[in-house]
Image (tube, rainbow, N blue to C red; front, top):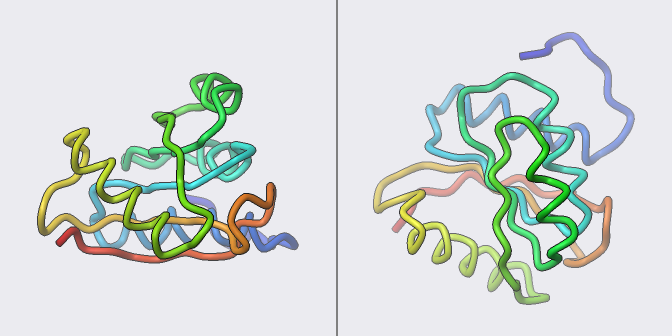
Length: 128
């Protein structure tokens, strides 16, 4: 994990915060809701042992992210409302067997939803 590095972009800082926090909490997964795939790319550049699940509504982005280290891209349509999108993501991951009740995971997204390069939120969740 890189320390002592300075970031000038909010999305880069969120990516590093997700990696750091998930590692220290022993999270089961890191989840990125992404349209462009840039958040998954930032996180894939650092060696972490926690799988990164990148959820996108765009097939082209899903295919591109398949080349990123430690990223498991998944196609998923999400709501334009943040709280609904977060709930949809957790449900999707539960159905896929990625997380189960009691697991902790980190999730990132941008607000407003659907604005590429706008990731500005990190949330730590426990699966209910």
